[in-house]
Image (cartoon, rainbow, N blue to C red; front, side, top):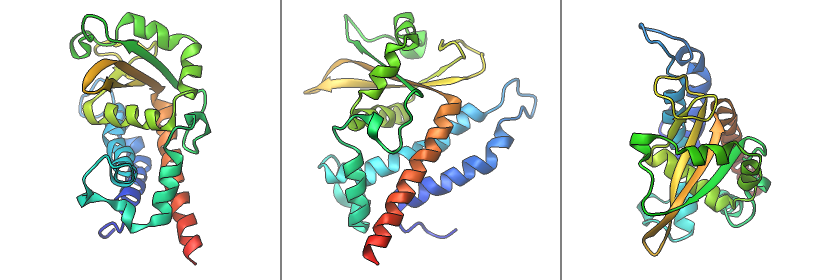
Length: 224
């Protein structure tokens, strides 16, 4: 493959091809490892898939980044489609969202933020995410908030969880939890927690790339 014409679309598509081709390999135990590397690979390969369209198409149109990496100018129709899909409408209506796959909880800041690196996911957050209300809470997020949490969680690192939604050292990874701060005028108000199973996250990435590809194809057909 040659140099991408549009990083925000071509790189996610290429990453998805790598994901599909290499998934059987990284899902097997090799080299004396006790566990496969599929969770680490999935997060690593998905970071540019999710973040590039947000950083280089959506953000420039909303005055949130400098203009030296602005892929929105490469295709006005595609940029318009991305901007229309990421806004204040409920994420449940977004073409890249699957209801029932995501769980959300907001935890206000108290005396201090929890030390996630040292202590893992707080038990109160775990219980909130396990409740049925977490599914509805995720559906009610705006697409902008949803994408922001996902973008920040990928950029700064989230949490690996076991099949019970717990942070258990050495246990097989079954879920991801993306964490992002809620801020107002530079002050941290609390933490967003967005959880999904590894299986559903992989499916989401295919839907995300499909959404970008469909938007690109529509933009091309509109020019014809």
